[in-house]
Length: 171
Image 1 (spheres, helix red, strand yellow):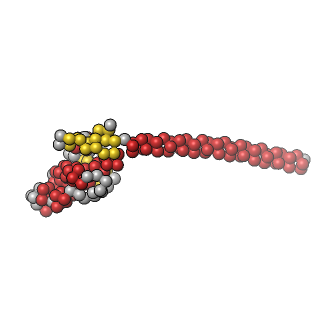
Image 2 (cartoon, rainbow, N blue to C red):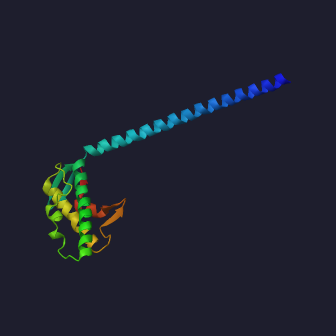
Image 3 (cartoon, rainbow, N blue to C red):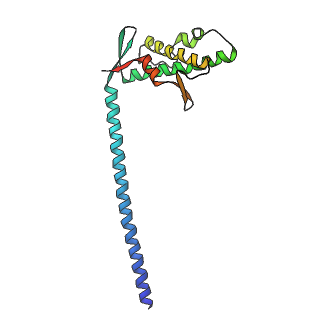
């Protein structure tokens, strides 16, 4: 009888080890499958990003086109957004302190190069920064969100407003 208990105990232990080993192999296979899926997803994103980088854009302004690549287009988008943020801040300050000089009196607006990087033409950057600044100033002065929105601790210009300012077209 003692032998029967030992045989049963050993058999149960062997079966448990077998089942655990089988589930570990299955879990490992699932893990490898997930890893391969993730690797393919990252590879597709990388290809899409590289394709986007190679694309050229043209931006229509004052009757002529300005040509740039993806990086230049991104910098001009940043110029509008940064202009909006700075303008909003200036508009808030003018409202708080009762100043009525308007955005033209702001040295940040006049300079128009806050956040500028030399990859794009300085005059282009200034123009788009000032476009964002004007709209941000109006929103900040009147404490509204007509041209932008607040998200993640930052003010950003609305996508449709950004699109109408930049008028970027891939080609």
